[in-house]
Length: 293
Image 1 (cartoon, rainbow, N blue to C red):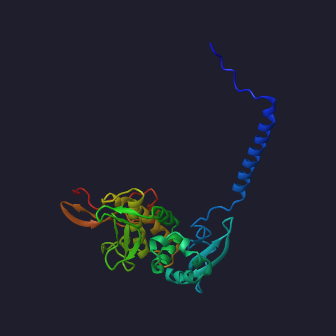
Image 2 (spheres, one colour):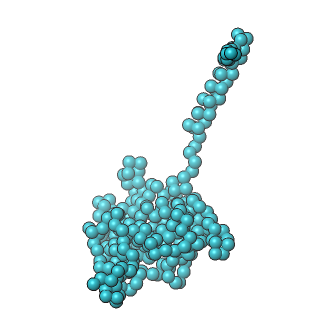
Image 3 (cartoon, helix red, strand yellow):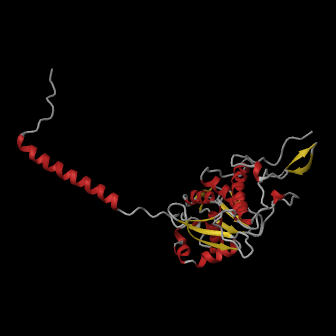
């Protein structure tokens, strides 16, 4: 039986191998040094991370002459302390400031939301305000923008998900991921309940969830079950407005989509609920139920 003798190195080759081993070790050390000293890749959201809006009851919130808290925009320090704070009467005033601020506007094309806004600053800055008010929306926007185009099987074209203004209803055109936003809409159904009224940016946030469902979950056709997730995330945004934006203390969570039938007749919308009754795990109800007898 032939036995494998193993790999033997003659004396004249040992010096060459030791020399090559040294070269390999130096090369590895060089790569490690380069990686450790090379600048980190630019984070498109880096400009956003040090900033945010404070809760109205935060003791660091800026107040007006009457002591009422303003919409307070802050820059945080590394330890979550506040480096500076600036107060605004409303979101429009903040947008006007942000457009002119050299730090915020200088890198606008690199920020989350620029691609979705298609460079339209009338959309971009309100969207920025929304993402600062409710950081969870920034995650939604980032996920949508991570996929630059989707295939619209109805038009047989590749489409870039984006936001457009509309004079009609808020909606997401599901096959293309196009969000149509009407900034004048503040009611869902005209119901005589508090939850039916909302800030216009809440309507945008709701439709962005449907765009997220198109891009991330690849849901190309609308289905009523998609409303549950959209309303659930909408309530997170509603709560952020309630907590952070002056003048919106009346905002309430959305308990469901519409109403219910009783003995075959549509008679009521969901009743209002208080924030003390709500949690992030709350699942809003869909619009139509079995008859209540």
